[in-house]
Amino acid sequence: MPETPELGFFGSLRFRYGLGLLVFLTIAGFFLWEEHEAHILGYLPLILLLGLCLGMHFFMHGGHGGHGGGHGGGHGPHDDEPREGGR
Image (cartoon, rainbow, N blue to C red; front, side):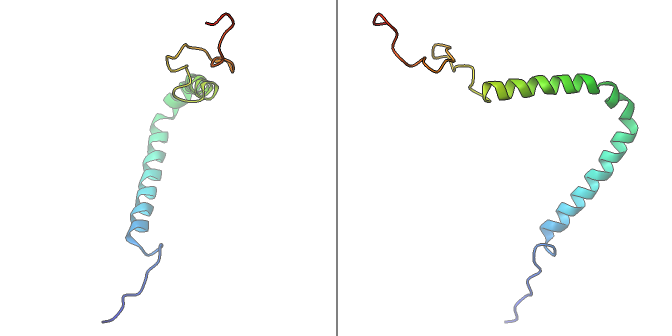
């Protein structure tokens, strides 16, 4: 039984579809930019401000679950230690 030659990654069907998708998305992005450049640049300060706020919220709270998770609401390093007076 003759063996089929191995084409490798660049000859595979997966690479061809990926390359075709990349070319399509590049062309589509170019035409979207050309048609909507004025709108995008007009809203750019607002988009940057919103992105900055979301980024700060994500990194300052450590992602999801960084709000305390409903177990007392404390954020300090000593929240798990017992308090004075037996409480």
